[in-house]
Length: 232
Image 1 (cartoon, rainbow, N blue to C red):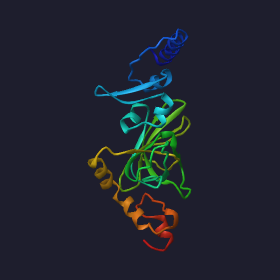
Image 2: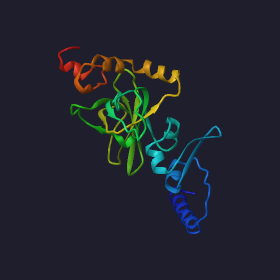
Image 3: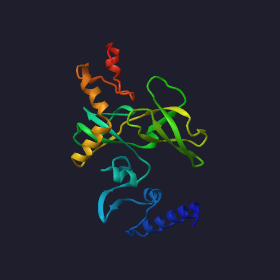
Image 4: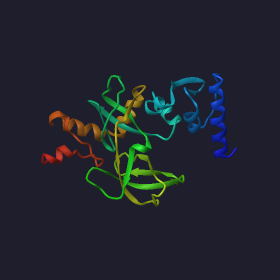
């Protein structure tokens, strides 16, 4: 079926099943279909359940990077969490704990593409990036960007369908929180993040004497708070 007819048929089938109060299991690899049609979603990996919740909560608060990527595009950035803030290549991002105990230390930071904004100029708080690819989808676009920082991480940002960007073009990006910290599952995970973003930990440690932890990590690896104190 073509995309529009498939979506219409899916809505019709769900309407019939709800009217008949019939419980049904739909097996699909289509993320959009799962989010649009299901009342509850179960994510399976290697024959095991790795996530289970209603679509909205599972999209906003997945338990792992695997679950996050199973339900839409996701930016998974290495970061260092401290006192409810994640320090990453995009700066300091407030965290959503959703009632869970905040974890200090190396984490994976989840940001959805709609939380990343692309702008043509630096307004003093954005991060430089170069365009890798713009995937046009009619009403919107998805742009892949390479961030200008030591870790050379890439991010996805959602833009309007009218946005025109070319590969190699330099732009500026900023992230809006809250982000979600996905904890590591072992020492190898923690070491991977520590190796990738050791400069973040160095900046946090160097700014430990700043009142209220007012330290902003910049993508260059330099701490803005330290600079304001007249030091490199």
